[in-house]
Length: 160
Image 1: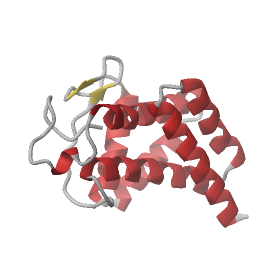
Image 2 (image 1 turned 120 degrees about the vertical axis):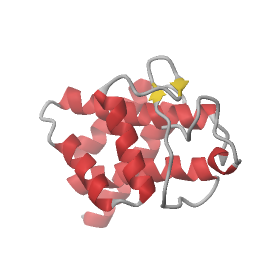
Image 3 (image 1 turned 30 degrees about the vertical axis):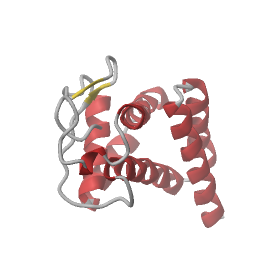
Image 4 (image 1 turned 45 degrees about the horizontal axis):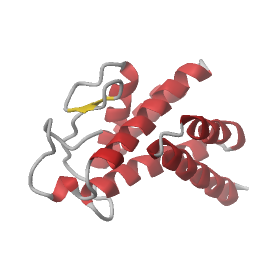
């Protein structure tokens, strides 16, 4: 069941991200709920890794590369880049992406554990929603490969 379950989680994660990019939040939420209900904890791990790697691939315009990264926060309420995320959810999303982008497995695991430690399902959903919103805003607002273009986007930084 392991490989099949991971495959299902990846498909649902892709559905959730594409729906978020299209601003179809009902469909995105339904896909995330299915990951939670139908997949193991490893499935959620796969989804989080996949979302972060998709963000990185968009930023560099190709295969994700691990290393020193500079992220600028999205204020998901206003869509403004370069602002400190105004909520703990937005800061978590930025920290999770930053840890994955840096290739820091310990930091990434710590951020996933922070999510797992949240008992309330609605509260956990706010964290995941902030992550999807940040990635969707980046992919809708900044061109593919923007981090390799030599200049930071308006607002300074690499989005997240």
